[in-house]
Image (tube, rainbow, N blue to C red; front, side, top):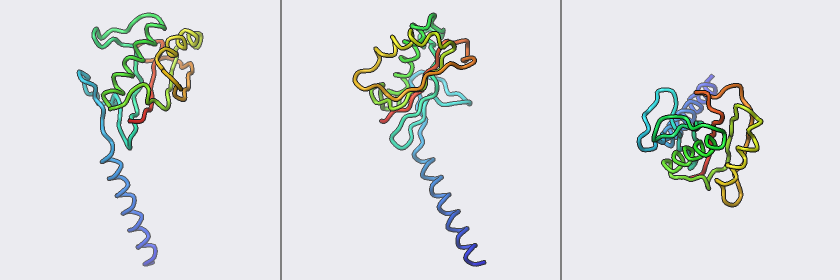
Amino acid sequence: MLKKTCLSVVMATVLLSVGVAQSAERNVVMPEGTKPSALFSPAIEANGFVFTSGQLPIDPATGKMVEGIEAQTEQAIANLRTVLEAGGSSLDKLVKVNIYLNNIDDYASMNKIYAKAFKGAPPARTALQVGKIPLGASIEIEGIAVK
């Protein structure tokens, strides 16, 4: 019985210390001019990485979505760049990218624009078609980068 109690105390202490350490190393990234949301953070910096939320092709200057897959790809990448830079990273430091397309037939057009954004070895990437993207966008891009 004593062994079980001691083991329980040790496990609780380890879990508590891990939880405290994780929460202490987790910081919300808010690009300048971004309004906080109760639903998600633009990005989270943790343990030397920046984890971004999906970036929609909304022009921050107008608050409106740009038109066409090529323009939407450019804008989503620009928004991703802004969030990464606010977190102390950059597009060149991306290690993983997920791209969600409303229509997989836009893959070639998206790739043409995407290829221009990266110098050298591009990050690992997944690109797939999804049912619907918020606000009727054709594309949404998220990434993980080192700081």
